[in-house]
Length: 343
Ligand code: NAD
Ligand code: UDP
Image 1: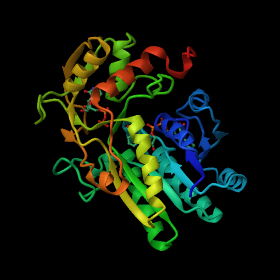
Image 2: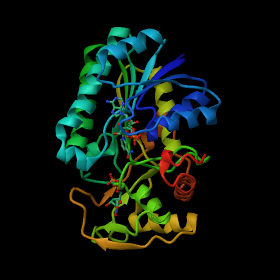
Image 3: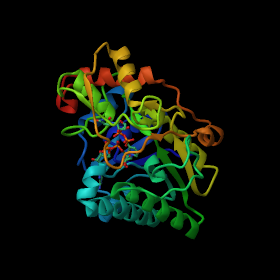
């Protein structure tokens, strides 16, 4: 039985929802986050929702002494590793930041784990490692590694280094979770995605148009070979994604080595379908205009989630309408994210 877990990046978007799910499931949670892209307010609200307090340490996964201290202080049996940088554009401009944080940070984390005798790790990978997939839906055995930017390469490098590590020492139990497109927020509207500046991703962009912070959505291309010419993605509710981590953690009790699971719904939606669904869920029209394709974008990307269903007993439950209404509730209740302070 695993009782105590370390969650790196636990104050962030997916990490905070997973911390909540872990606390509600009875785990003791230690969060390590340097707050470079998060607010401690997220964890205060997680405590409010769960009626339990995670331990919070503000610090960096590249700080070996701090990791050693945390792993000595707390009886950690597994690590869920969310900490990292995730902006594709920034990774092109500042690749070393991404290799240092995402790859270097994971090396330091694994060194500290091994020294402390902790060998169970759940890693936040991404469907970006599939690059432009030859076919959809994407199964885990499709070739990975043809990534188009330093962010994607950093994710793939970490997958490979974790594979090498597990091959070198049979005590390691590693889950590589390839997320598709996480969206939505906890149904309370208290925790959600809080991007700094102008959002890069579709959903936060739409909700900021809806709330009047941005004038209109730019739809990146309408000439793809898809249902209506706009890009198709597999949007997955962040609460379903969080549950996928608990399922993976449980499954790792029964296996050693490295294991890859897609976490997606298996259903692809176009940009215009998402815009329509958001309007239906929120009652807000989303003014948009079509602009040229965004460099590096692909036409369609959606998961075959059968392996996770069969092996983890997990599948996504929440539909697109729920994803939209939960995103909208979070945005309405927190127009300036965690800086709104109106919970
Ligand atoms: P996020 O930015 O909200 O969360 C990441 C957290 O890690 C933040 O709280 C940040 O402050 C923290 N962090 C960053 N570098 C750190 C460091 N060196 N030491 C300690 N803390 C650090 O992002 P998210 O959307 O919650 O993503 C979580 C993970 O999932 C990331 O690894 C990301 O690459 C991966 N992922 C995200 C998506 C997505 O679309 N959101 C898709 C696929 C994979
Ligand atoms: N997209 C868009 N306008 C935006 C942001 C995204 O049309 O302002 C499109 C994008 O081209 C893609 C889809 O929405 O087809 C999802 O993009 P996102 O950046 O959220 O995720 P990713 O590209 O990483 O899958």
